[in-house]
Image (cartoon, rainbow, N blue to C red; front, side):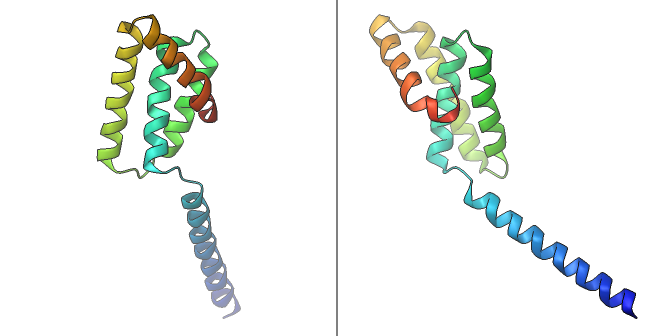
Length: 112
């Protein structure tokens, strides 16, 4: 009898811990706008940075934040990545300078 009560209390405790953990992870989840900006930064870093550790940091952020993200947002992020990568490769000197400033400013918060 004690075993049954003990096991049910342990199971209830584990379930409550899982719910609390879920709440904490939701609280640390980036907004869709932040996720889209990080995808843009990933495109900038990949096209303009010779340093692979910058690329890995932004990619790790995106992977961690992509869990349970709306597929529409994921598609928008892919489009932003490709668009900014194309801008960086094909843009003139002024465009590249503006993108470099963005990479050095906004993108630093994502580990770039």
